[in-house]
Image (cartoon, rainbow, N blue to C red):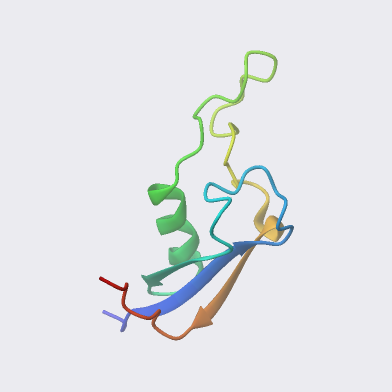
Length: 85
């Protein structure tokens, strides 16, 4: 098994309405590679599964980056600082 590394994920456009944490510019998580980081992000922040009544497409609801790989930037990074108590 490969050693897990830290990845920072953020939207290419800071105003992207799909970003699930508007007050947080990026999310850091551990993953095996960039593809695994995207998968883990999608698991942690799932979209509304079926879009809207006017556009009922599976996995295309609010927050979904599926099929739009260029909209979500993934970069290897250092471990984030520990949260302050």
